[in-house]
Length: 168
Image (cartoon, rainbow, N blue to C red; front, top):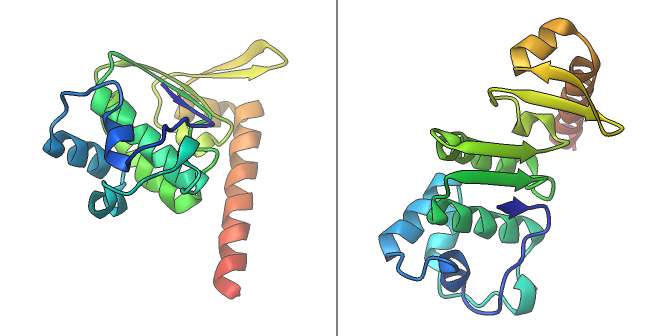
């Protein structure tokens, strides 16, 4: 399970990734980092994170939480707003890892950032506690309903943000 607010323990990055899988080899730890785009941590595995990960940014804590989930290799993978705290570049790295990780397993992904769920087999759109749309990304885009409006608005906002950043 990867939550919106990841929990880290005092100790090293390595110890936090290995949490729940003490027998993991160094190679498995490195592979889990590479799968989620956390290559930057490979040279920092012995770095202390502080109580609750206080020495790291929220995005760094999230990447470590993802690496921990990859290392656990669960049959059921749950993400609850897990990419909401990372920037779009980090999210893109994580998404490619997520795509690999969810193959052949049951995955439940809860997200407001729709780019996170775009490649899911089935998307349930929930509004006020009720399912209002159901289908793949393609199916929901073709319907041009609530999901379509949310997705296109988020895409437009993201492009505007990217244009603003590149003009500065």
